[in-house]
Image 1 (cartoon, rainbow, N blue to C red):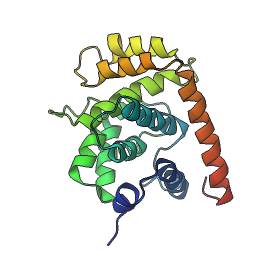
Image 2: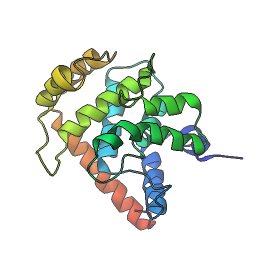
Image 3: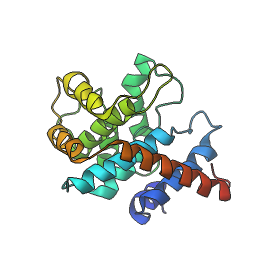
Image 4: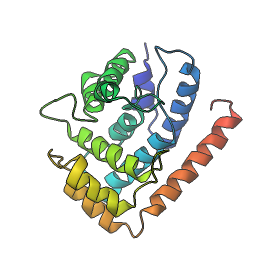
Length: 208
């Protein structure tokens, strides 16, 4: 019997089609407290950034695996401001939920290692990419309490605060990636275009 994991991970390889699936799933489960998932434009932005990082830096990872994990690893994050207790548990809760959808142990481990609260060691290399995208992408985006950081300021914040005391195998490569970009605002503009295009597409089929 085909599972959701089989469908979105193995059968559908196109990133934008995966995003449409996630839009549909988010709406379908929105009113079910037990099954609802978190998916919004911040997830789309971080996933787009991850794809660019992998391609431009020619990373030796499974792009399809990373993109799918990026779309799902925050599934139990919640829409409201996060309390510290929830911050420490949502990645693990998400991994446990993804297991019920048919994802294997490695995929769930990658998603759980989005942050460092799992204390998992050794970490999967794909998890290090998700960690950087989650931190960097989150800093670039505006929040109710602050404006988004400039790209270089966000990088400095990650290197000297967020990930200062941990080893992330891709952090140095990510700095090279940022330096290669003439203007990271291009990434934000492209991501906003993707969000608008996906919303227009979703409206046509009443799925968002």
